[in-house]
Image (cartoon, rainbow, N blue to C red; front, side, top):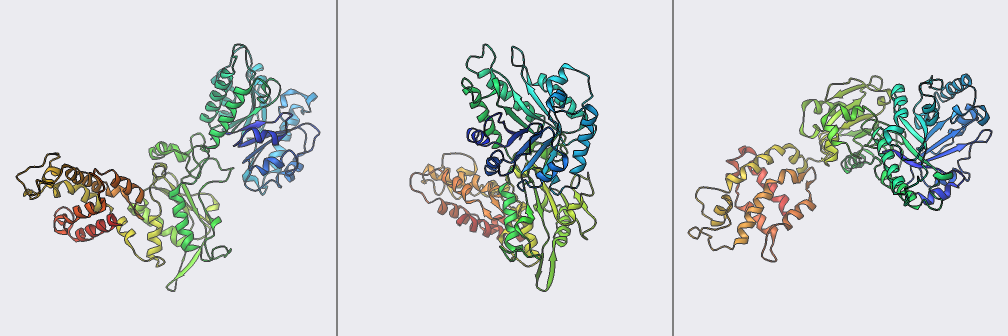
Length: 570
């Protein structure tokens, strides 16, 4: 995702928000000598109230100390992008400092935010004018001397045609690559050129530019509403509708928490948040179990496709991640807890050590785990990495354990609760139940599905329906017992055989997915009002434990048959 929004020009931000539903970045400019806008004032107040996730403030002359104090008052969780000395190449007549002063001020701004309590939610970078860098090609006077968090650009289409994205983005791409940071577009604009009577050409250009910036991992694009670029002016209705659509489409791509990790989170909180609604040091609090990174989080498994960065390790190091990249966050953070069961104490280090041991053993319910970053003593951070790439992590993992999951598994909706359910069972919080049976014997169910064709084709063929089903024929032999049964019942037996073959895919940690099973049963052919459940039970009755035992390990035969019967009957 690339944050999309607007620069309001002379219009009120409330008007802009009403026009552009789903805005994800509001880019506000403060002229030389003007104060920074109050967070609850007429400029930023509506932006904050609307829950816009990113505010990009560019300004000319405000002192770094004032900016730091103002930034400390921003709403928690909102990402703030800061650009001092907006468009410095324009010269002193617009309030810009001399070249040496500019570099000094940029360094001072970075210094004043060193150690700022909200630094993780603040990105700092300059904004340049692309046309200046094009005019003075090779002039590197304004190139940052202190590495910023990003580089912003004002990009306007000029000439008699709509210039291509590769042309207009060549300079931003080159500078970003040299600095090793992402770029963003502070002001994007294009007047409607002659010959583009209905504005469809400008609309197509907008989409091409956004697609290209997104593909580059660009942070944001804001359309400048002023002069011939004002999309709210008469005659620009087509282009305005296009920008509205792009904003809504992009907002829908935002990183979200997948149901599988939400289920795992709910399971942990259900049994480890001992005093729900109360903050207790010894138990697990909702705020301590996280999935989606905060708005400032870029790159890694807590981010979906909208926030990954160039050469992101959570994408490029495994084909499972490359093919599974989606809008889902693929990581789970677990904070500190302490519980006592049967007189024995269990805590986060115990869970972490147990989980890593299960990963190292390759248990079926941990095969989707990419890495676990944790600490056993609150001092040393270690990492178990399935790919063997890394052995440690940053200090924040002294107080929480991070679990990354391969993206293809999360995209496919694979259950991730089973291993935590198994842990809670082993320490005595949960009673052993049939969910553990499924996890323990998944391979046996696979064997049963593979054995069904043989079980349905016993050489005696005492039942004509079974003989026809075993040989894939719709015609029932009249010389065998049961030959007078109607053809639809033969199709039923064949369909049920197919359904049983799919059981390993239908059965999860919580049992058979009722929606999927109902759909499968509804698809069975029938001459009218037929009791599918009774037919399934009848087929299972024709597969007694002694026949199943011939195809799968004998000691598990009875358990498998009983479990299959129970699940299909409920």
